[in-house]
Length: 77
Image 1 (tube, rainbow, N blue to C red):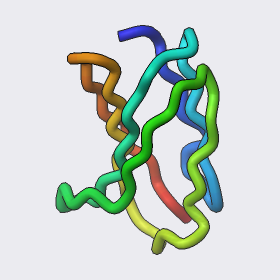
Image 2 (tube, rainbow, N blue to C red):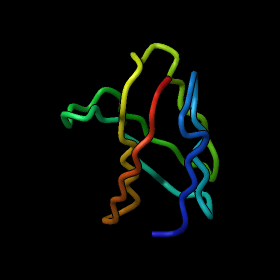
Image 3 (tube, rainbow, N blue to C red):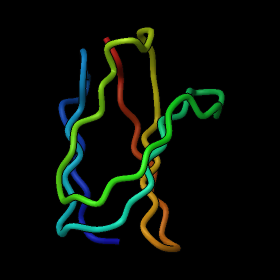
Image 4 (cartoon, helix red, strand yellow):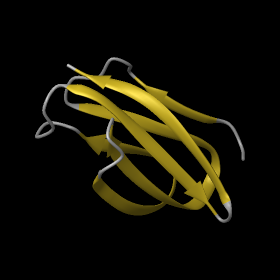
């Protein structure tokens, strides 16, 4: 998978996801327990994820591009 950047970490109300190129991507936000709390599809090189309604805690962003999946941890404060 191409380079993925997720910032800021810790996050307050939103995080920015940046991919190397514009791609068809599925994004999931998961709790520490593995429950999926948000899913969306994007076709962009950069997009924002709104976290304003998520409780404080540790979450994971799962980025899926074709058959490649990567998971990144972030803290919501």
